[in-house]
Amino acid sequence: MSANKSKVAVNNSRRAFLSKTASTAGMITIAPGVLLHQVANAKPDDQPISEKVRWGMLIDTNKCEKGCTDCIDACNAEHSLTDNGRPESDTQYIRKVTLRDKSTGHELSLPLMCQHCETAPCVDVCPTGASFTRKDGIALVDKHICIGCRYCMMACPYKARSFVHEAVKNQTLSAPRGKGTVESCTMCVHRVDKGETPACVEACSKGMHDAMIFGDLNDPNSKISKSLAQYGGKQLRADLQLNTAVRYRGI
Amino acid sequence: MTNRFLRITFLLVGLGLLYPVLGSADTPKPVIHEPEGEGVKCVHPEEEMKRNHMNYILHQRDDTMYDGIRTEKHSLANCIDCHVQPGKDGKIASIETEEHFCKGCHEYAAVTIDCFECHADRPQKFINRGGKNNASLQQDLQTMLSAGTASGDQ
Image (cartoon, rainbow over all chains, first blue to last red; front, side, top):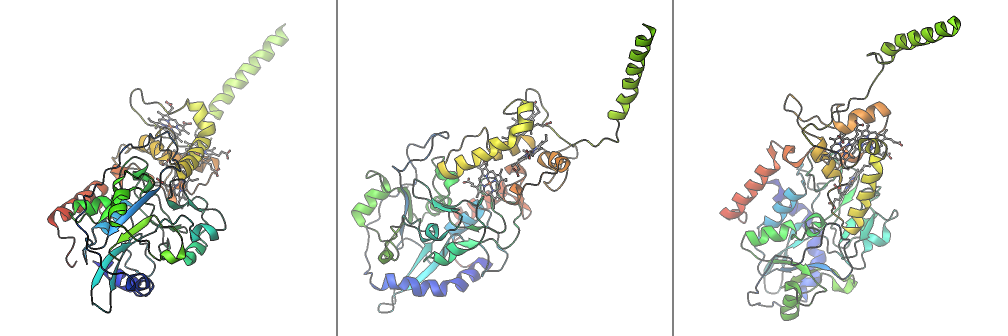
């Protein structure tokens, strides 16, 4: 599959960037947490989202298998991200990154996607207001007003955004996308609004890896909050103080 | 009296003569394929939809984008679900052709919209992705996941 090639091609700068985070991290061995992917109390369709909720994700890098692409495959299918065999320009919402601790030789692998920052640099720089964070913390592009200037792509420290260079055909009905706009992981808003979990998280647990938890960071009783409280989790490049909604354990 | 009678007759004859001209095939008319089936009705009365359909979907667009409101009624996906069905030849008309519900009338009224550069122009079950429809892709994914082949080298 040529997706693998693409991962190799883009990973280099990312690795350098992330290793800053990893070098300081001692390895934490974690007891297997109980992972749940169900979200309780789905919002009714006609109710607006609320700022009481902050959706987040916790990724346990100790459980994330090297070379596994379950989350990426599910994401690509969900959003009809097509592989044109041009890794430099094809859209990727999730990329697998491998980090190596030079002193121990320990390697870990993690999925990297939009970190859904609270104070998002992409939102700051957007000239049209197309980049925004929803009340529930999900960072999005309103493609209806995106002019494709790609400022946000430059501002994003995680390089999480892609530009659609080519006309798109056969999109899924729930994930519209087209040429000339910027896009990135939407934390599967169309599913989350209906009380479902993001496609990647679902695939990870279906594949029996259970390396991803999705849930409400603001609710102390949610699975994700409890797990974070008990075993901890880190933000990538926490020094940037972006307060990301995606957290990692084991880095 | 006779004069008046004549005038009215001429008028009627004139109208009668004009009628076939007005209704003739020379006058262009929009191609509109409406959904068939008993009791199938639009989300609002036809006259209202003719004039104001754009307001409903544009409003819904912002409600969904910013507030996560996912009601079906005015959602573009819902319009497409009901309005775009296979024709007599069993095929779905693409948005590029006048046979597509949203295109025929717009073509006639010289309205250009870009919505379908991103949005699917047909219901999900008719979306063909690289020879596979979504259902079969889903199945592939499931088989792959259950076989556990996803990890390994591909």
